[in-house]
Length: 330
Image: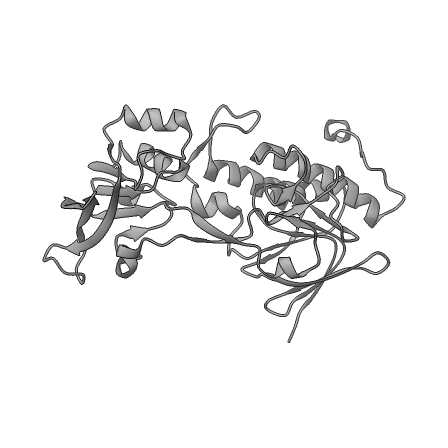
């Protein structure tokens, strides 16, 4: 049996932008339904880098991803949203007169007066490490939700992007040893982070690939004990009880691409009010595209407030786009 949910604003995506949009909609007195395909709040931050230090959020010289999400969740829950987690938005009908009808993959129908899409990069899946196919969850992970399991271990991090270098840097004081393996000698990570890793005890091996993983007996049934790293055809074994495959991820907008939204390079085109080309449908955060777009969490917060304030007028035509400062309501 399908379930029906009625609200003023439906928000698809429970990452930082979606959580702030939820709070702000509540601040404006709107009833909110919050949808996300992940089973918990926080989006990519929770799933991919909860322990990472984030340095570009206003008011925080540095803040861990987990701590930022905790604050955003507490703020968002003040709006008392209907939480529809672990569900994917599969269908959309948007009408200027009747409103928005959002269908979820479990049959739930959400009837809203406006929709705000804050889905980030959409659903994402990690790029595989071919040699590690039989070791996923048995010593090989794609994300590092907690550093504690790596204490005292020999860790091999595979990749050359920001996540690889961030995790190598954070694991270095916890693990027995950290080796970073990358197939090129140029890196995609931020130069500052690269320099920090280069000046640490992390060993960086370039023009290299992890070509095999083995247990202590040279097989694949016991706990992970070593990896084979091949550098320009020369294979050598290294001790490793843990491997972090930070090779990036593949993003998929999924059914959203079939809704008739205008897109550019898999992002939603919006105007200065965060309106998409569909009536009553807005967007905010990393998923948006416009001239001069900068993909930062801090930018997403501003876009979320802009989207909510303009959606509020769609919900109630007598409302004002700018409701006044929150400090004036206390």
